[in-house]
Length: 236
Image 1 (cartoon, rainbow, N blue to C red):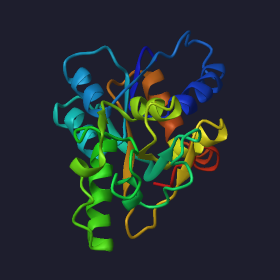
Image 2: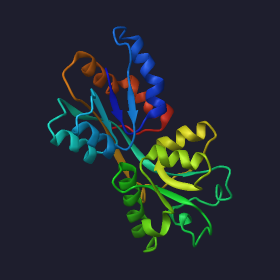
Image 3: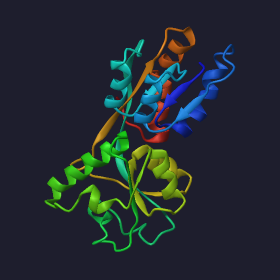
Image 4: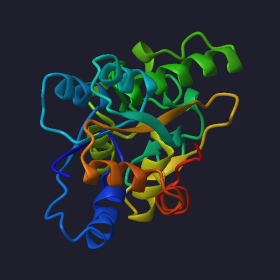
């Protein structure tokens, strides 16, 4: 496998790829690129040398599929829902438990980040805000009122929160699980009435044997159970 484009799972894939390579001794390297699904999909369509594409949404996977590049058809291997990620060193770490708490009118001075709307994590945040407006009858729960800054990808957003550049943001549950395990962030979970979830999909961009083997591995129970039990992903 000469290249894998993926919008998420960085720690997970970095950990798991060694196990995959040990069972495929003829593979000398697995090169993984991380970033927003929308950006990576555009790179794939533009001709980036990639064997496997992993996307955090159906929409971005369809960019690759509709370009006729998904030789091994996209398959959903996991789902991921939203959560509020908080910088543990800030004064707002214990004062945020709901979407409304991200408003400056509720927590004056709080610095909040959201992913750009074109990224899956940004689309997820928009859906969560829409659900919260309806659930709590609060028209002020909008991106414009909440976001002090927008991040190009969820990795960028999480890093800013972990470093204390932001106090909070709407990220994925898996990001919360990973960051909390490293004591880099704390999490505020969202009720099902407000939350939303994205599909995570994998597709092979050619028929090479190693590409097919990598896609099969991502779809395996071993991969899926580790994603769920250790990293907070949901079943497909």
